[in-house]
Amino acid sequence: DGGITQSPKYLFRKEGQNVTLSCEQNLNHDAMYWYRQDPGQGLRLIYYSQIVNDFQKGDIAEGYSVSREKKESFPLTVTSAQKNPTAFYLCASSASGDTDTQYFGPGTRLTVL
Amino acid sequence: SQKIEQNSEALNIQEGKTATLTCNYTNYSPAYLQWYRQDPGRGPVFLLLIRENEKEKRKERLKVTFDTTLKQSLFHITASQPADSATYLCALGTYIPTFGRGTSLIVHP
Image 1 (cartoon, chains in turn purple, red):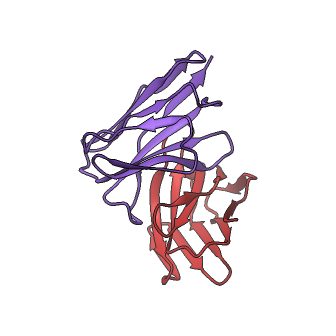
Image 2: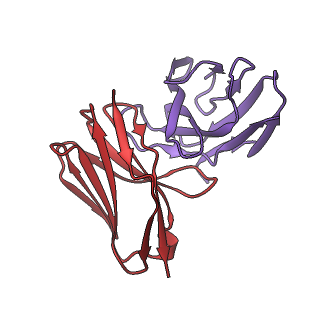
Image 3: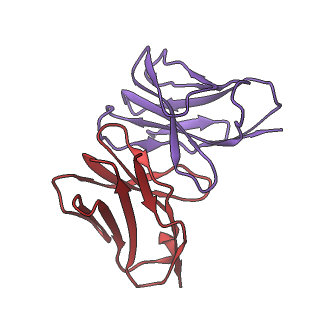
């Protein structure tokens, strides 16, 4: 069963703590993306990666970090430097980075207490 | 600055009617435009892609038009059903897509 998975579905964090969100895909896609969605807002791009061991900042990268050590995995770390981290985080993948359909995971809802 | 506009007010229609959603953009010259469906608490699901040199695309009950002169895309769902109720996002770009905020569609039985 091919697809893209994110874990956990819900995550609670205390202020000042770093937290890592998992994203795994078995679609053999080269490109992977992280978006943030706030209520009533569009998806905003945090980071993207077109190939293993390479990634670029998106529009709102401050306070976040990523790694792409394996083709199928693209974890996102929300650091304590992110001032307003409570949001719905979506991971996506596409066959390449150019106009292809994006396949989204189910999302992780992060709440900072 | 670049801007994508989708109606923030929910669209309410009766079952069986055609739903029409609008996506307008400014300060863009997109190579393509996509439409996605998003259900509450879930990730978006791709529906259709239309390229700048295409006027119209169809898929089953769905139809998308793309007018680069008006800088507008229309998304139609014919014979709408309550199961079509969701938020619909447009996304456009030349490389990685930029997403609009989405319009909520509510189909009443």
